[in-house]
Image (cartoon, rainbow, N blue to C red; front, side):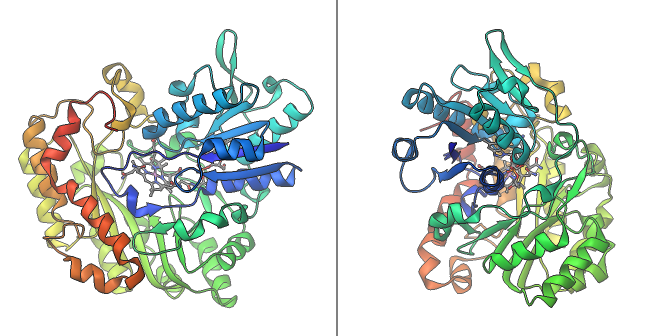
Length: 470
Ligand code: B12
């Protein structure tokens, strides 16, 4: 069966670090590989670059179209895209998958869409393609939410969680034509690797553990090493919790070194308490890349703040992790959450923490009830009517305690502490020294675009809007 898999252009990156991360659609690459293994003919299209939908629909003539919806902030674009696909091809079967579609499918329950994928695509998509090819009803395929004359209904869930080794390597060849467009921070081209999926912790703002029911699945060491060896010099590891299983992780580091795999730059995401207690493991990994950054969800400058989001770790762990990582020459990158109910004193507490630990490579996001979290479920009635573009963690979904004007002044003031502030900790000249001359125009453009994070008026302008600015 001919299948078109689409990564939409969310076009909603006015705030935050999105523009710095033009990442490959790894989820679609795994789905595509599973479809190839089942004898189908998938094509991946990244609508952020190059030719548009019409061209690819005409060229590939798919019987099945799959659209990816990773973030809640993409719902509106996905609905629009699905409507366009339906207009171009009334008979095509239209499936939407991805994190946001799986955790909260409701906004995607429209006439144009036939089914929503509620679990791992590697297992569900080939099962659906087989059913369609054999003329069987999609109702026989597990882990779907399908459109029926009586509305959308769920099919049986998968019997057990998909084993990640079902598809050992993603179909990277299908996105090679976009490779030079993919970048991560100042590194270009960039690759994304997944070594594990899920997280056993229970942070209240995160929808990952809720979708995965606190499970943590791992790819085999051999598959991870093969994937690292096949990818280029700049790698972002998409795992939510890198280094979680120290013995396996040590084995991967050793196998990579034995194979002679060394990257120019590596970025991984992990928890502070985990890193703080794994000095030897971090030493083992350090040589795997020339520059090695760790992204920490630091979340709060106080124990109360961490308890408030069920982080299950103290601030002391944050401090220890920063010290340990720096002592081993890791770059420390992080994110803090800002509660709309804060007063000025909590902002000041955060500023003082950031200054005393010199944390400038950091982002600051608003505590947002994201679909798929219990927080969202409990507030759903209060949030009704809020447009999806505001779920980017830089828009307010209700009036803050200090009032929007004062709140955004303090929020913008907070962002001024980040390396992105060109009149702050790092000048444009300092950035230029780190970047290859050929990449300088792109990085400079991204940095100028990012200066709006430090402008209260930019946030205020969108605060009252009910539809996204075009
Ligand atoms: C990489 C990533 C990004 C990248 C974007 C990557 C890209 N390709 O565009 C960057 C860094 C830019 C990013 C940014 C943000 N992100 Co993000 N991101 C992720 C992360 C860490 C990994 C995703 C990934 O690649 N996983 C690995 C692949 C293999 O899995 P997958 O994509 O889920 O695909 C599988 C299934 O979903 C499914 N599938 C996927 N597509 C399709 C399509 C079809 C047709 C089918 C059948 C199946 C299917 O099959 C695949 C294989 O099983 C996830 C966390 C997570 N675990 O999902 C957060 C996550 C998706 N991000 C999140 C958030 C909140 C954000 C930000 C708002 C954060 C911020 N601080 O600003 C911004 C938004 C940026 C913007 N304005 O667009 C949340 C979303 C929550 C929600 N309910 O909306 C997540 C879940 C993190 C979290 N802990 O809560 N993100």
